[in-house]
Length: 377
Image (cartoon, rainbow, N blue to C red; front, side, top):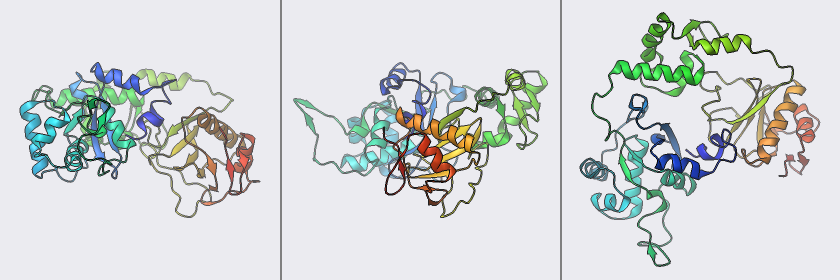
C-alpha cells in the first residue's frame, strides 16, 4: 500500500495526483481489498473493478493464519452485516466504544484480513502515511477544526463495508471465475508461466487455472509453447503476444526502466528468480521490499536500489549497461519517482569511486561526499 501512490502509479501516469484515484473510487470504478498486513504501518492490497465480481479478490488472503475473532471484531462484523456501509462513529459505538486506538486496531485487523474495505482511499493513505496502528493522538476526545467537529481519526475516514456484502452467493460458478481469472492473467502477462501465477498468490495456484488454459488452447483462444527459455514447458500466451515477440526487431540502443521492487510489472522475485550480484557480501540481498527499486535494461536486472538509496546491488557488469541503468535511475530521482540517492555501498562493500559503478554514477551527475556519491536534485 505504501508504494502504490509513491512509486507504482506515478511510473504509469504522467503528472499523477491522488485525486485521480479518489475520483475513480468515488465513481465506483476502482475498489481495494486488504491482503495481509506488513508490520504496523503497511500492508498488501489488491485493486479490483466493481461489477466484475468473477475477478474480485477472495475475502480472505490465502496465507492468513487465523480469522480475527475477539469481541470487538465480532461486534464490527455484526454491525456491518446488519446496517451495511457505515461511517466510523457508528462502528465505534457498535464496537462498544472506548479509545479510538482499540477500535481502529480491530477495524484494520479486519481490513488486512480481507473482510472489510472502504469506499475511498483516504483512510488507506492515512494509515501508511501516519504511523499505522497504535499511534496515540496528541489530544483526547474529538479534535476540532474551527467550528467543525472532526468525527473520527484520519485512518477512519470514509464509509466501511464488508467486502463480500454486495455479491450474491453463487452468482459466479467456479468455472466462470476460473475462466475470468485465466483471461485476465493472459492479458496481464502476455506469456503466462507457472511461476507468474504462483507469484500473484491466487488460491489454487497454477493448478486452479491450468484446466481452463488447456481448454482455451484447444479452442484456439491461446497458444501453448516454449516461449521463454528456462521457465518450463507449461507456458501459455495470447496469439498477439507471440506474434509481437517474433516481429519486434532488436534495438541497438539499450532501453532502461525504473520500477519499485514490489511493482507487479517487476518479474524478479515472482516469475523470475533474483540473480546474484557479483561479489555480494554483508547480507545484502535483493527482494520485493517496500521502498526498494529496480532498474531493468532490455528486460535484464541491472541495478537493485535498497530502501533509503544508500546501497546498490550492481547485477550488470557491462560498463555500457551500467551507464544506461544509472542514467535512468538519476532521471527517475530528478522527477521524483524514486527517493533521494546518496550511494555509500555497492554489493555490500564501500563504494569505490574508480569502479565501473562509481564512474557511471559520476557521469550521471552524482557528486562526491565524505561517504560516497550523492545526486543533488
